[in-house]
Amino acid sequence: MTDIYRGVIANGGKFVGKIKVINNLNDIEEIDDSNIIVTKNNSPLYSVAFIKASAIISECGGMLCHLAIVSREMNKPCILSVDKATQV
Image (cartoon, rainbow, N blue to C red; front, side, top):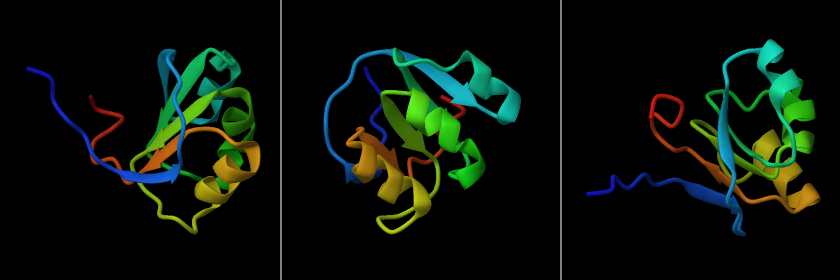
């Protein structure tokens, strides 16, 4: 059985890739365009990771947060408010 996690779609789309969890700024160096990044925080400090990755999942945020706006500007799939995303 597959667990289902729900969130708010900030920007729709599909992408299949390797999941990379970002816990701090040092993790950004390992991100490339084959990655889906998962973060607890959608701080503007992570903007470089948002630019490098091809899709984004975040535990927090809503339709008007920084990450939602950035994902729409870059047209990258983005799901926000996914409970415990970095733990799964």
